[in-house]
Length: 327
Image 1 (cartoon, one colour):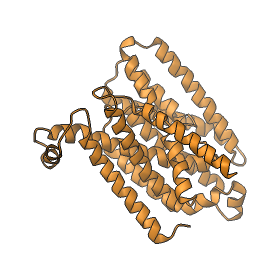
Image 2 (image 1 turned 45 degrees about the vertical axis):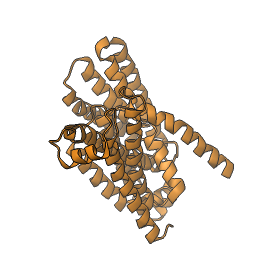
Image 3 (image 1 turned 30 degrees about the vertical axis):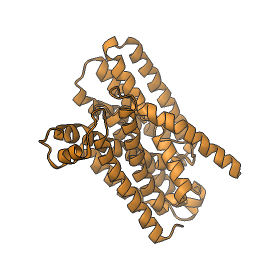
Image 4 (image 1 turned 90 degrees about the horizontal axis):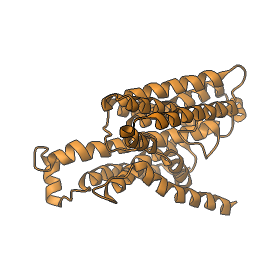
């Protein structure tokens, strides 16, 4: 296990980089600010560029960090839940329910401010469907949960395809951006930070149990862990994290898959270290990805989901190749 001093240094470094990334994102964009202009805007929100920094760039960067942290923490939990390093936050259909509800709202002209609430409603409906159908009687079955989630996700995908086919042409661009994952109009609601901090504290308190659970349900039961209860708690917490992220920014891929993988290689599988490391690095990763999405073709902006996919695919293939070579 990593020594305590190194662990604290790692957490401090990731925290400083996270804060730095948010302010870096506030300084970079299609409108170039000099150091003096940026500092003046930061110190005085009423200055010439104060509105640009405080009302547009900083809220978007803060939302990006929070969404990245939510997805990374959820990815860690889903990989423990299914004992599968390929599991990601979207695997059990939560994002499908959220996306269908949000896209349905777009297709009928619901105000943009209500879309996060619709996405939450769809995500919670999906959670209830999967929980109700997969719970069953008898011992826990990860296979049953996975199959139920995959089938539910397929059902939502079919309904989403129907909406895209029948939806008005004027809303198709926004609907596609939502499906890819986009932070153009994202803002940071207070509840998302409260939820992130609350669930992070809860999972950190469960870290020792998660370490045991990662060894297998039989081992966890023999060591006295309430396996069935613990697994359902992990599922519900991971699903709520995913629902929060999707309701803010749509389906941003690869963050919840790549970040836990990468941090596990760097810090090991001890969840007392992995959970905070992945959470901090996930936020940092998405802020930098969104900054790239805003600037690479400025003044045009890419959906951040495109950038995370372009970065995530080669990185994931590299990680897989590294694991194969080690074997």
